[in-house]
Length: 484
Image 1: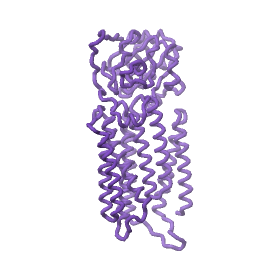
Image 2 (image 1 turned 180 degrees about the vertical axis):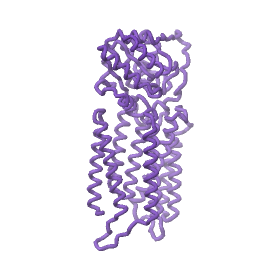
Image 3 (image 1 turned 60 degrees about the vertical axis):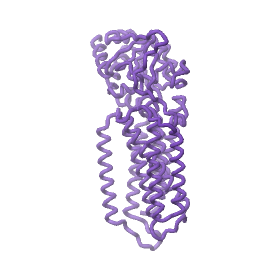
Image 4 (image 1 turned 120 degrees about the vertical axis):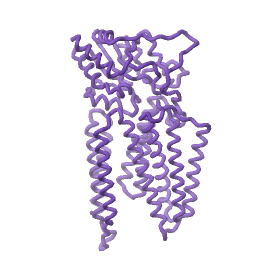
């Protein structure tokens, strides 16, 4: 296969990836964007395999060196195993488990970049290679392995936190910033020493960098609280892109460089948007250890009056909805865990048929992944036209009769605006308390994922409907259908 044909195919694949990112920027075009990304990846994979199977001669008249049968066998096995594993995961994973799946996929990219770097180093340290002959390539190897190793272990820790295997509470070690700095400095020193000694010994220095970088990646994510996990997933997405770009430089593959740069830059931009939505900086997220009390039941305050909540019943909630002219649904991760999006959609459809103005309010950091709630609502066939972002829906709350908050806590917490002592003070939130009535569906009075109590639960216009979200909304749907 000629290099010009491969370059043209890589250019087409790159354009498809750019169009895919553009399509994924809106809900209406996301399906088409995803399709273009799939087609681009198919082209890239097919051409890469074609270049390996039918290599072009190094020079005119030169003999074509075909790949060894063993290499082809290993490639075929790797493709078969990867395709089978991907197909099974795609078919079996639930939308609620999508965040941890994405985190695990990021770890694969990091591992691949680190292994490519180690392989390149072994090849470069073969007998006869003069130490220090290619400074740029050596830097590419060390940077690629360093970023890849951090992405690998960091993504695994994020996966375990999102899955609940590891608690969301951050692991804050004494002097952790000094420890992180020492690990970074050690990696730089090992890289310089490895480049100077050259030969087989330099491989051991690279392996040392790999081990330390793995420890650094794990420690960075372990120190981040559960409330910041959406930003962490986005950051890891960016890390995986830069790791892929580094692998592209090591393999001299232009498409991998372009693709990695696209993923890395888009992940960085998304991380910035997420941090802006939380009124935080990326440095604050990575190094602050926010959310140390995640998942705990808030302690009762002893310096003020005892706060009580007003409980709602299915019947009282039904009556409020039937009497309402406008309703806003605020979904959270609790709705995702309960897989209640389908009965919720049926409720809103029923209300809309009765002439009720129904909308959904989406906070940028709702769920455990950027866009998680949007995907869940799309899965339930909720119309894009009634799904509103925070900036465009906040002004609607004062004119709304009923707001239903389903499994969300931190994103509707008024202390973010009026309590300077709150850990989430300054974070933009959905101002649900401005509605005439607020109905919160929760299992109990435990704090949200960020470990912060919510004063909204105690307001006069708030009613608490306790229980499993899916059971509650299913019972509410039955009550509404019976009232028809």
